[in-house]
Amino acid sequence: MTAAAFEPGAVLEGRALGQRAGAAWLLRDCTLNLGPGCTALLGPNGAGKTTLLRVLAGICPAAGGRVWLEGRPVGPEELRRAVAYVPQFPGVHPRLSAERHLQRLAGWWGVPSPAEEAAEALERLGLTAERGTLCGALAAGQRRRLAVAEAWVRHCRVVLFDEPTADLDAQERAAFWAELAALQAERGGPAATLVTTHLLDEVVAHCAGAVVLAAGRAAFSGGLGELAARAAGACFRLRPGDQPGPPAPPPDCAVVTVETDGTLGLLAGPGRLAPPAAEPRAPTPLDGYLRLVQGLQGRIPPAGEPAAGAGAARA
Amino acid sequence: MELRAENLLALYPGAREPALRGVDFSAARGVNLVLGPTGAGKTTLLRALAGQLPPASGRVRLDGRDTGARPLLARQAVAYVPQDIGLPDELTLREYLQELAALDGLPPGACGSAAREAAAAVHLEAVLDRRLRRCSGGMRRRALLAQALLRHPQVLLADEPTAGLDPVERLAVQALLRAMAAGACVVLATHFVADAAALGGRATVLAAGRVLAALPVAELLASARGQVWGVGAGLAPSPDYLLQPTAHPGEQRLLGTPPAGGQARPLAPTLEDAYLLLLRRARAGGDA
Image (cartoon, rainbow over all chains, first blue to last red; front, side, top):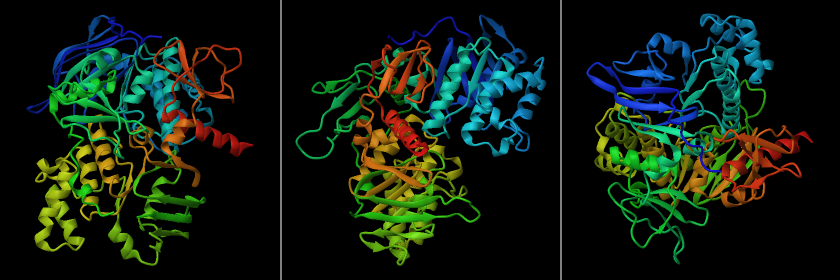
């Protein structure tokens, strides 16, 4: 099966979005679109990811540009109804039960029958046993599930998750993605979701497209294959030589992967191509991301450089 | 350099269950991973190894010598990088590192160069005079690693050093740990299995305060061979397998044994698959 094509028929679009704090621009001329299904929002820390989510959800109106929902421009008021923003640490009242929390939330958003919707959401997300548990006593994975339930009771067209998996372990992460897939497959579920994450592995496993934000601009918005292609020609492999230990990577190259036999997956630095003697390898979305961000900031330290303090460690 | 723990039992005041229930652990030069779900006891084990949490029973030995009886030994040879980023925000990175170097007993004239050297090792030399408050999350993580390098430790214990880092910062920290592991014993607790895949070495998997498995990462990966399959949608849940969604609605990943007669095509396992299968087997074994 080939990778799912990123649909140009966008559900949610941001066109030339701007946002600032005083004189500093947090977002500037930021243009992106979300197709149906799940899209990843990637970017270095401080790139403006949370600001973008808040603008797309209508929580803080854009200082410039416009958000389009299913083909028409919409204002913050309508965005707040149609788009759910799930922060990394949702503001739940610690002394409300999970069920009361959902009922109150549904009531606030004017859902016709809050009690039924809350009960159904709890059941759908396997939280029925926790319905009476106080929000403050839920485990991290359960709290994340409650956040998905919040999006469910509101029947939003688009759900934006801010780092939903950052504090989850592997089992809880797998459960989160399974629930999100079920939610999206549901009739009345969201048409599009945007998920902020730093873990490219889960992007490859669960998302059809990606938006890369760097320094307040969308450096990329498209399918994962297209993202990988940004590193075309710069990815190569270095097999271990006769000497014991991993091979020394050439200068200006980042080590992206290390296989168990010591083979290095390398990415050539900005403005450079793989050395002619190197064995080429297929670029991955991680390579494409690194190449984009490297080109913009040049922050990645060369891997070949021994860490001074480490090298001096006395064994 | 060998770090060894024998039959560690740890109990937090007021807790009903011990956080560690008889853990044996050993780590040598290179990368030594401590994996496990949230609450498995990873942080407790690291704190016990660092001498920060006296175990209720059991021993920690450094090259055979009991560190419980000789706390200075652990203090000098072992550096601990905690998960919580408690940094003195009002200081600059240089002031922070110099102060710690002085506390470590370096002569006043040597503190400046030690701070510079440690900052350079984590690629932070350009922000030495920036206040810690103004450093990004990734820089603060690296600042914590830098303070651990001041002493040229023989053992580095790092608790979730890549949590919250973006991919570029994550690769930088991985490269740093890999370089350190060439000359020292690096013990790394993480719930990001991707880090384990990138760093290799040996893995100790904890669950509910016990050691579930201790084996080379390559062996853990190999244990999932033939157990990861691509299947269509619509399979019923079963105790024989775990189903995971993919980016394609019509396709799922199956971990375990696919139903007979169905259409399943073998997929290359990832370390995360192997880890999930291991936890699942352990749970099934515990239920039986």
